[in-house]
Length: 231
Image 1 (cartoon, rainbow, N blue to C red):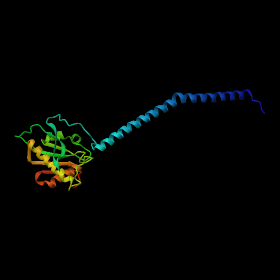
Image 2 (image 1 turned 120 degrees about the vertical axis):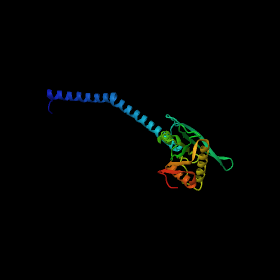
Image 3 (image 1 turned 90 degrees about the vertical axis):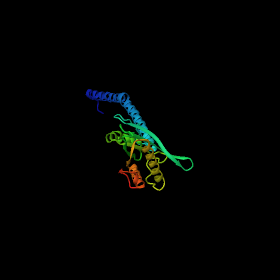
Image 4 (image 1 turned 180 degrees about the vertical axis):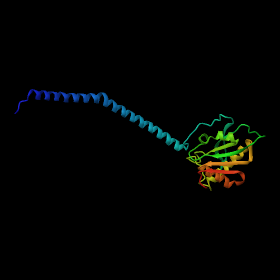
């Protein structure tokens, strides 16, 4: 067996010290850096998961209520006014079928200066306020000087706020009758040109606008549909 020389012993000692120092450094790094980072990452992950859960829950609630893009009641900042109401009629024994509506009246509309009426029907998953916001209804109606009636489908009539154009013989027929009754009500209440009533709709609202035109062709000057299926 060979004896270790002084240099060999020194190398062995330094090696052991280096190993011990490396282990101690590793423990220190783990304790002071890695563990806090891991805890912070875990906490951040949990926070993100909770936030995503809240976001998904919000989307799910919106989908269940049918109002995907809820908006505040529209406000006109350039003249004219928004009003809202509710209209319906009796179905069967004392049961009322009613729908909310919003209506925009531009400035200067009076009995001496009546205006055309545009019936604007929203699509599935919308309400009248959100449709008014995304379509800039007040601005367009003010510039063109049109009164705009925006009926709103209820979640009781359709869980997704779709107009029931796909059931023309049942709910579709009653909804078109209700909408015509609402149009008559508004036309009597406001200064409307009776021969210039038009209906336009988006998606399911487009299909319902076409149903109105097919069932009551003599009541409309024009019918428009964007992305609406033929009923």
